[in-house]
Image (tube, rainbow, N blue to C red; front, side, top):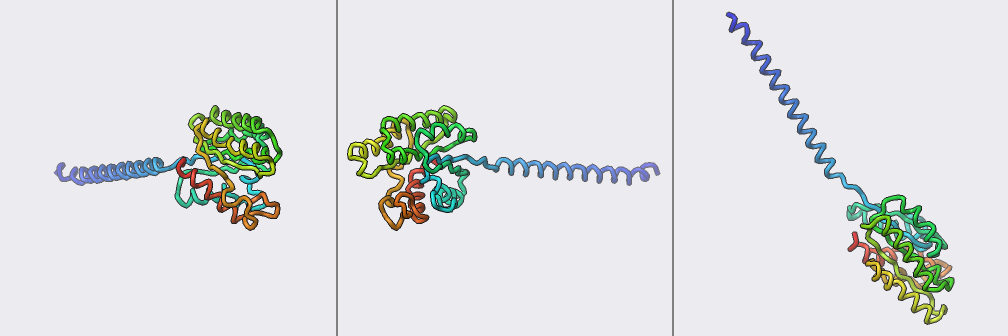
Length: 225
């Protein structure tokens, strides 16, 4: 009789134990799923475009500037990068020296340097511009030793004098080689000097012109990313 009385209790305990195991198994499964989801979370890296009004997108909507177009390309390819537009109208290499530290407060993984054009148009000595650009490059390397770097080459009009124009043009490949930087030979290739691709000032690209600038940059940047 005692055995018969205890049988329902034993069965109940067994059922409760089974339920407990099922709950533990479910909790473990949920935990594993959460862990896998966390593992798949990708930390985005930053690309800093540091330059002049060409980078800032002078006269354009911010979404039309070439750095924004690069971000659109990156997003379409689902690459883990966020573009930071550090362009400033009128920026010279000397002014860039004073501004770079502030921008380096955020982690930078890729650095695209577009400075020197305003120096050239003002006739500043190439040696001085070179020194300033090297200072900026050194600052970035010192803060982020693993940073990948891209340099945008520029040119000045021939009316600046053939010697000056040639020295200015050659400054960029020399800096790129010295610092192991990817070089965009001429940022304004297929845009500079073409009226329909430039704003009335003849210097700053239109929205259509910036699309070409974005392509000029992407050709070199994609390999870095």
